[in-house]
Length: 360
Image 1 (tube, rainbow, N blue to C red):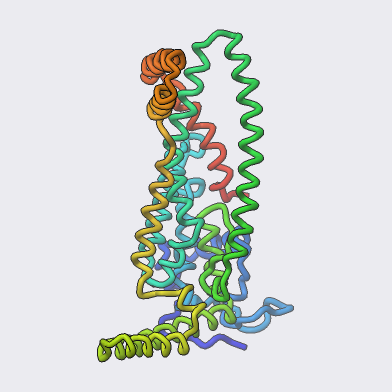
Image 2 (cartoon, rainbow, N blue to C red):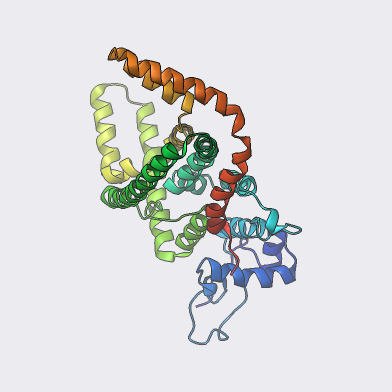
């Protein structure tokens, strides 16, 4: 069945001009995007349904107003990926280039015109984690570079003992990482309310462009979109009735009656899951928390001060003396770690390059 066309829907020309592409670029890129993000091409066609013979039916492209902005965003993110930008020397890309791309992506999501959709994406754990990661990587880079400079200056006996300890410690860190991943997934599953799927909370991705792609798939799913629209409309209508009643009721009995009416209209589960009227404050709070989380990479100065304080409290003067000696050593080395910054950035770049590179 052919999709009905609305006035806010875009045809091919309107869409590729909105993205900033030429016609030729559109037809080349759109196939790559369908493949990269596993998108159903027929959902972008007027036919609006999958055909055994893809040449049958109306194969004209149409970009529905309900999800067009997400499709535009995904195309722009794909096009602005550091590995696809015009005149980019891939061999000279750095961690800083990838982090700037990540920051730009966060900003583009923040600027989506659909307020409800924008906040739903911004409240997704993957979005919040990206904010924290962007901040944390700076501290991680500094810690790695200082580690390498410190190892350079110790005796071979100490260095050997350290490498053995470090290797075993890394084993534990990797195991803990995967245990954290499993535990987090279980918590998400347990916390799913009846409307979690409506609010996209179940998505699991490892980069922001894939997060946008998954939101796009959800918005193109007619059943999902209908559920989401019904729930939002019900909430809006109920909240409006509540406001009208509150304006004319002051006594505790009347307030209680208002609340009971509201709960009957919309249900406790929905009240707890979607409070659109308060979502701005929730977003601000979550963004602040994410930024604070990313800043929790403790500087080595604070670590050594904490160790000294603990030893002083336990009156272990020998340990205090040794730690103060270490403190002086650390201070003298902090200005000498610059040559290892590039090494640390290269290590982190390699990891993030694998995540960001969309070339086949």
